[in-house]
Image (cartoon, rainbow, N blue to C red; front, side, top):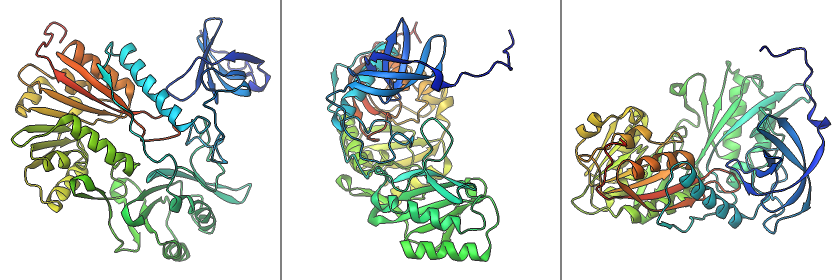
Length: 457
């Protein structure tokens, strides 16, 4: 049946204001309630609150709504620190106490493990906490020249839209970067290419080394170049440019700027990196996360360990520092090159890195890597389904530490490991890498029980 394209869309403002009591939070940080058997997702609501709401999107099985008024607030509700909260889409949970945010994420992790993977951890780890403000060392900001207002916007997108939020500061970015937002708006407005500069990617290293990668879609004039150089000098930042694909990213000014790096003092390790290469956005929590992973993995002299999705060696080098021999595998050649550079810089010889498409792992290709005593897995949001499906009795490590940035795919993969591959989920817990957002990082420990279910595989 064809949709009637002439039928006018209903204006959300015409929808009735209704009342509900919030039952829980969903994975996007929205309050959840049920009305007449229909699920309602309500932005800005917290569990146990009595609120009024107005639906913005109505579907047959669910509705998406906004809070109109909080009639009976939760004890966990707090005043948002950022004046842009509610407009900016960068944070979802500033109205919730920071400790309560972590408790809610832990509950979501446990719920996903059970409902998706049909598994339950024997114990839950204490959550890993860190700074809740000024923690973000990497970000991608949108840029928009608004001709009608004769100004440039620099910031995250508005909540639920592709429009750039009108903001002049950000409480989760490191303060030095937050302070650059307003000056960047003024400087870009003076450029001839102000409508051809859609994005700024930023990275902050140790010793407050700041790099801004400007996505430039047109040729700069001499005056443009002069303004960019003056901005870099005045604010003590490095400006890099990107004109096409990632291979066009290069320093613009200064040409000999200090290299970005982060460190893991516990392991006496230093990691150089380029501003567009993946590193964790929250270096303080990263230190805790690596510590926890090594505590769970317990690498020992003489052991052979695999680090899958190794990136630039964030976990690989600490494992090697504990005396084990490590193979780190990663899909991107540039990250493997950087990992090799870090291994040499830190004088670690019992490390080997390689490039491999881990999303196409098979039983045969896994066996070809050899037998490992233990694994560490740190995949992107898609998880490591093909890798864990490829485990056979001959390839099964005795321990797997799984670091995840998506509880749903962790739960799916945990279901395979426990229900098909003979592992026990010993423990799991959340890592609060992104305070005030709904993003959930977690860590889990699996122990092989030698009961691989051949029929399930």
